Length: 112
Image (cartoon, rainbow, N blue to C red; front, side, top):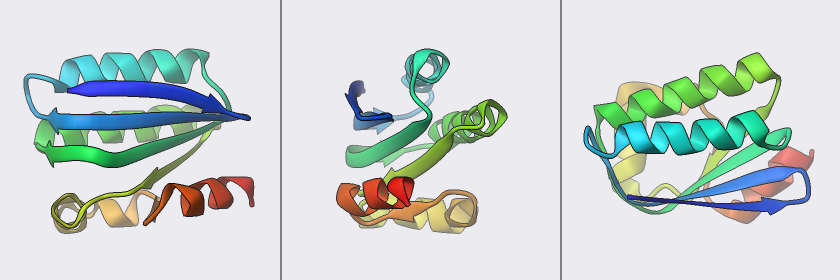
């Protein structure tokens, strides 16, 4: 599992690559947490490179959502493939997160 980070204007761009499961979730949580603590006012998590997410990965995202809200930051997600989106839909996460098809759409929403 790889977490890549870039900054575009006032937005932290996070790219998830590989699998988030019980083994990798703690490291992903730690890496995103560090970015949140030192980061910008807006965060976009791009799932284009994510192949799989388990319940442990979903817990990481809930933690990220709670922390961004507590810090007064905006959070959006994008580029979920069909399988990942289905996991989000079944678990009710589509009602919790702002999810966009493309990174461009997600960035535009953050700027609005």
